[in-house]
Structure formats: C-alpha cells, structure tokens
Image 1 (cartoon, rainbow, N blue to C red):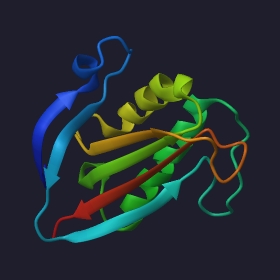
Image 2: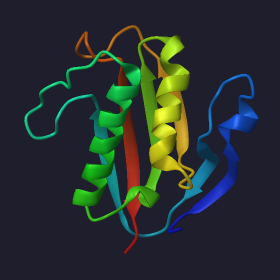
Image 3: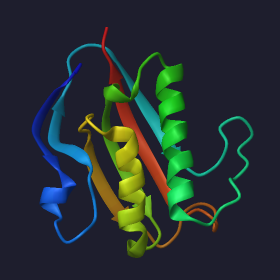
Length: 138
C-alpha cells in the first residue's frame, strides 16, 4: 500500500445494524506523489455525458465507481491510491445499497469517507454522486 492508513475499520463493525462491508479508515497519510482531485462523479458516461438508463441506486453507483476508477487510471494510478471519497445520496434509504456497491471497488483500500444525504443533485435522475481524491506515489 502506497499510503499509511490510520485506524482501519470495516463498516460491518461500525454499523452492525446495517448490511455493510466497506474497508475504511479514520485518516490517510501521504507523502510526495501527485494528488488527483476528482470532480463529483455521476451516473453518466465520461465521453459523452449521457446518463445511464437506470433509476436503480446500485446500477448508478457501479457507473460512478467505474468512472472514478477510469479517471484514476487515466492519471496513472489505481484504486489503491484513492485516499478520500465523499458520497452524496438523495435518499437515506439508498445508503446501504450505495455503500455496499462502492465497497466492491474499495475492498482492501481503506480510504476516508464522508457521506451526506442531500435534497437533490444537479439532475433529477441522479440518486448518487461521489467525489474522490487520489494520491499517486512518485
């Protein structure tokens, strides 16, 4: 692992009442490298900004996380370089589905994470948006 992850935990321990299994941590320490700040990713194609044809939070989250992975790779990194995510959802009832799906992409990575429930996102069809920060070592 390229970065120091402080106080790693899994959400199955932190939120036992929820069906979650995400590897997160309380802090990430980086040194050197290049920082990649990702715009909030939405359930749309990166090449043409066309929304995916789904109103399912799981499918939308898959697209969002695929976009995050693609952008980090285009910057020369990999998902292990992801240090922070901020998750925005439009309904608290989507939380478990969104976090379970996101967890598939961050297994073993342990980024820091903040989650917010918001009234709406930029387009009415969007249920989830995730922004991230990655630090790619020298």
